[in-house]
Image 1 (cartoon, helix red, strand yellow):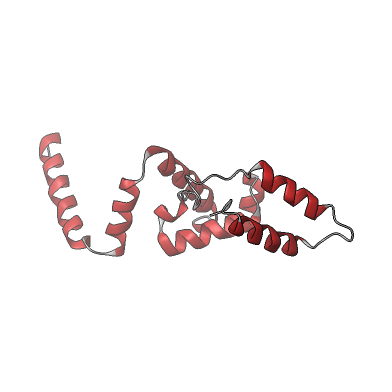
Image 2 (cartoon, rainbow, N blue to C red; image 1 turned 180 degrees about the vertical axis):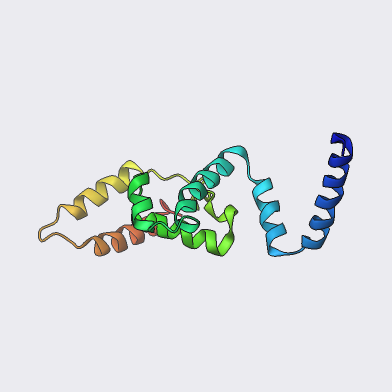
Length: 142
């Protein structure tokens, strides 16, 4: 069989399989992986290679995480996302507050310092509630 005829048979076979898979979960995952830009795709593949030792070689997830220098809980989260969403689930998500200002104004900083230095000290939850109220009232926080 020549190289050209093999390529033609391969393409026909690939397209036949693709048509059968169209609309299935696997096909949607392939589309999602293909739509990722290079950086998120690389991250997803790196994470999968790490998980692959656990999924295919039956190594303990705790040992795989320790060898890779990541937390066990992080590895569990990646595994859960892989099982639920496939390879695209391992790509890093965009920040929910992307495009929003994350720094606080000097005025809010001074208010927070004054509240934090009160005696007796306020619990963190109380500080958060008060700062949220102050920010919303003065329209300093969205």
